[in-house]
Structures are given as structure tokens and as C-alpha cells.
Length: 273
Figure: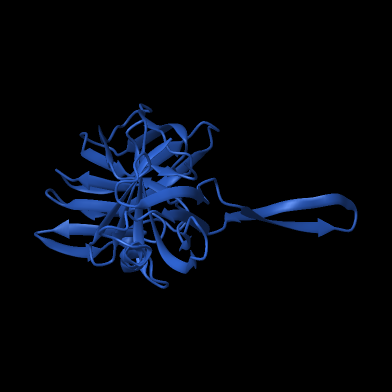
């Protein structure tokens, strides 16, 4: 259950909407669009095959619609005052960040842009209906998670329990403390399908190699003597950009020689609240 909503404008202004009080004159009456968004499925049909053959799928953008009642005290504020207060955050085209505070202490964040701001005035209970489009449909947990490990020459794996409901990319950081020419990251989830990421390049002691598999930010960078450069060419074209899947994930970083420490950072993503 949602207990509070925080709205942040692009300029850093903050509006707090408490769901259990009407002290500020703003009452959240309804929120639509928090469920998992619709998926578009692509298939092919064949002359002698009943039905179709699945090809691919994608999830659509998210449309959040908020209905907020306006209840001024009329001694110091009016309906127009409350409406102008909301205009600061929800003017159409404006970018906003919404943070939903849940009963279980989860704080889920999502970014969007205001599509419409409609006011229902000529009624005993004035209210506004605000539509926001979120181009990234996922809610993101604001608390980052880090997992530490070391490279191995064996089949030993580390276990990562991912509590999100949709896949998430990782930030893999290898703190190189000796010369290294190649290594491989193996990942498997509950379906036991093994994904591999092969990397080959001359690495030296004190190098920091970062592989970012987050959608929209994918990159491979090397920090050497405080100079950051791209090392994308070191990643094999056949490699898979590893993503954590909901549930238990198993990761093994194979490298010949002494163990090298690494870290895996990720943010938990939810397809719906």
C-alpha cells in the first residue's frame, strides 16, 4: 500500500502528497497506471502452421493518471491557490520525478513528463486529473545494491538474489592488481541458460575496468593513471550484455592466475507496484 508520494520538479522543488491527511488541501483520490504495462508481441504466420510463431516482444511506455481533489480552507487559500500550487509541478511538457513510499519501506522512483492537466471546477468537489507519460516504464528502488567477489579458476559461483520483477543491468568493476590478458563472466538464472561475456585486452596492476550493461548506458571503460578511456573493443562481439533476472542468479568470473577482486552494482527494478 502507498503511504506517501513525493513529486520533484526539474528545478528541484518538492511537493509531498500524504495519503492519510487533508491538511494541505490536496487529496489523492485515485492513481491509475501503476500495474504492469501492456506488452506488444510480435509473431509470424505460416501457410501450413496453425496460429503463429513467436518472434519478439516489448513493453510499452507507462501512463500514470493522478486524480487530486482540491479542498481549501477558504480562510487562507482558495481552489485557485491550490491549482496554481500544482501548476508549478504539473505544467504540460514538464519533467517530473515521482517517488512512491510503500508500507514495507520500499521507495520506488519513476521519471515522467506531464501530458495533460485537466481541471474539473464547476462541481461541489473540485479536482484535477493529471496524466504523465513515463518513457521508461519501470519503477526503480533508490537503494543501490553491491555484491563483492573474486575471480576464480574453478567452477565456483557467487549467488545474487535479485528481488526485482523485471531484469536489470549491472555495473561490473574489476580492480586489477596484476597483469591480465583475458577473463570470462558466466551468468545463469533460474532457467539454467548460461550467458557468457568474454573480454580480452592487456590489463595492468592498478587498472580499474568497468563494464556497464544497463540498457541505454552500455559501455566498457578503463581507468589507468587517472585517465579514463573506452575499451569496448576488448569485449567479444559474441558476448551477451549480462542482466540479472528475477530470483536467484549465479555468477562466475573465470580468470587464470591469482584471484582479482571485483564488485557488481545494480538497482532493483519493478514492473509494477
